[in-house]
Length: 241
Image (tube, rainbow, N blue to C red):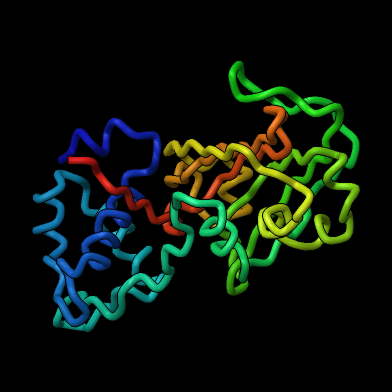
């Protein structure tokens, strides 16, 4: 167990707190459960007492555990943040997942050149509108996103695109044909800027999604580079037998 903590740049107490949080979320430590003693946890994870204590203090600040004088530390609640963004298999499901979120534009440039396209991803449109946005749900930021939208499409409804979530608008436009849509998800860690924007510790796990829509001419009309909080993402896949 100790080596898994040593191999990561994330602070050990933060890793340990995340492991404890997972035990609570899965019900391994249900509400009302008394945590093992500090001594037992230091032996189990081969970590210093101060590291274990910091991890428990972090959970206590989140309201997940509570110390009771002379009795120990008990689980008082489960993590409350639902994983409400699903990695889905259709555009309609993807659009519905953003319907009750609130975007906030951090940066916008309505006339930029080609986005950072890799070979085989599609042909660039002549110009793009670029938006860097922060998305909120229930008052909490859950993702930061860089969007490149074909400038010709942006000009069809600029006010909507500036103030509302892009994908539901795009999929509702009857004169726009999305011939192909793809996304790739990778796991990363939060850098200083992302950690601040998404209220995370530096080095906390995040999900990075690269999403591309092309039209019937294989022109990339939409490119998004999205960084989600790790606890906002739910992945579900059907496995072929």
